Length: 117
Length: 114
Image (cartoon, rainbow over all chains, first blue to last red; front, side, top):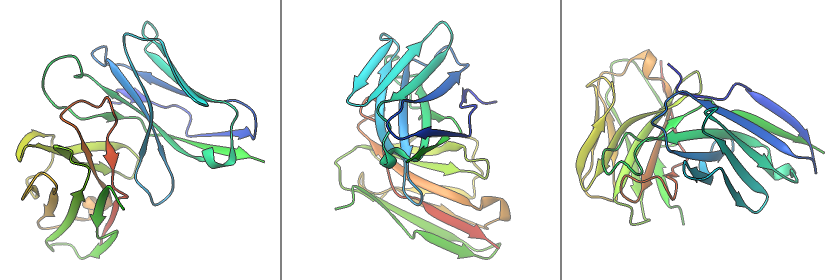
């Protein structure tokens, strides 16, 4: 039962263009979402997050959009750079504002972003 | 100066053996986690520890036991290893239960059971 889905295993984008990575979720209790970036042989590193009270969060070249009614979020990277080539994981959490519990994060399978020169 | 460090990075062992993976964080976080990345690339939580107390335990076989001597360490001990235990195991840490600042992950331990 995949509660967080990243349906594109890989994505190839030309350097300088916009990269758009998509993520869908099924659990309506999720209210906090994060994106992680992972290079080979390294652990995932936190990139950007968004809470359900917002529909957009921007940090430099990275912007995350949340559409709660569609249970969909996306990560935009613009302009894309060679160093952005990595696997990107979408993750969701159900407890930040629930006052307790620790269910950890639920991750998608990841999307391998390849930036072509 | 590694924030979350795991050892060993690679571990190859025979079925039936008992092994441990160590994890240490120097971030002052009070919650630590173990995640397993399976063959389908899913990252799934196994355990978390907060203030030396186990607060979650997903459907993980009791052959797996987390041990936390202090809040900077969360080791994973595995008894009677099976072929299906082969995976990459990631340690992570955070402040409390809240993911607002993201979790900090270690670089992973690739366990291969033969």
